[in-house]
Length: 304
Image (tube, rainbow, N blue to C red; front, side, top):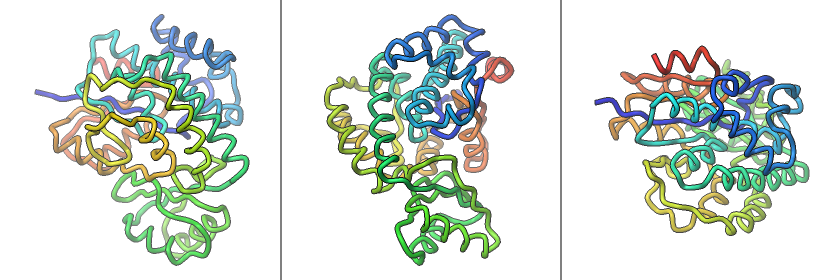
């Protein structure tokens, strides 16, 4: 019997016009944006549908916008009767995953992501940094180059066997990318203004921890797989502490996928803008189905 996991997109997957077809397809998807707009204090639907790429890339907009698009896709698939036995998100995606698993109400999910985005935005302005995806090397090989590079740079996202994201001081990331280029490997700069998932974000983690302590978290109704451990999370006693550490810790997505496959999951449904996670699943796991849902065409394919 097939086992399905819902995957939720991370920051950087946003694009102008995202969610338009999902909103048109389902009143429940439209309700997600109404809820988000009420909490955020601005019209998130209008921003997603009419905002420029630059406007959508701002952390305080991108994070709730991606989460809302992910939850709109979730509303569409659930309306069609598709359910999952587990959830997993990539970085920011863990917040949509928490809502999907019943750990947070949708309202609290948007309140929490607004606090996270604000803390990270302030930190990014005070401590600018860079990130880049390195293709065609193992994580150990990427780490070795980072260690030999002057300044602060290290692997932070373990995305697949052949893709690792580095983060750190801009000069150090640039120098490391030059080394990778000299090795004949691709280094793709990410459209972010900070070194997410590194120690440079510690002020954001500290600020966010204080905000997160004001929220109540329920245990998930379905399995929740975690970036921090790369495994199914079983201890939910200190979620504010977990989420604060999450801001400054690596994303162990490759380990999560291995743990999911070992647990028998063979259908991976990415909900939200883009298909980055679908691509990572296809590159990492054999003998599984991977689909994304972000518009009418992909929704129909997933339902088919």
